[in-house]
Amino acid sequence: MSTLKLKHLLQRLPVVRQQSQTDCGAACLATICRYDRKYVSLNYMRELCRVGQSGASMYNLMQAAKTLGYETEPILEIYENLEKSDRPSIVNWRGYHWIVVYRADDKYVTVADPSQGLIKSPNASFR
Image 1: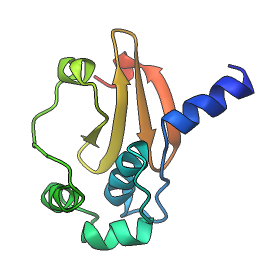
Image 2: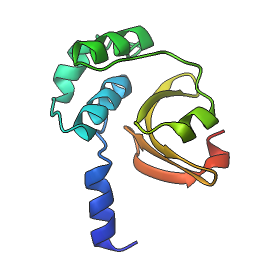
Image 3: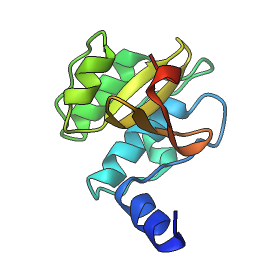
């Protein structure tokens, strides 16, 4: 991929990186905000999400999102729902880590992982 294409992709699909092991949820919500051109600091998001020693709960992420004007709905996400979505989704990955799924199709999934950055990988690794 050319540098120009990569730069354009990164501008359209932002990633807010986590600063500690426990703020992945706050970083994901900040990523969604940045995607929507709302700029909030990670420190503010950590407070809003009430990040504690074990991170942010789904409930606290939902409350923080509502405070920022987002509608939220907790669902048991299956891959087919992600394929149909036209919005980024915050997903609990492996029970202990929050990521943002930007796109999912029959071959690839594109995620913003606050610990690793923007990742495009075969969907088999995600299912």
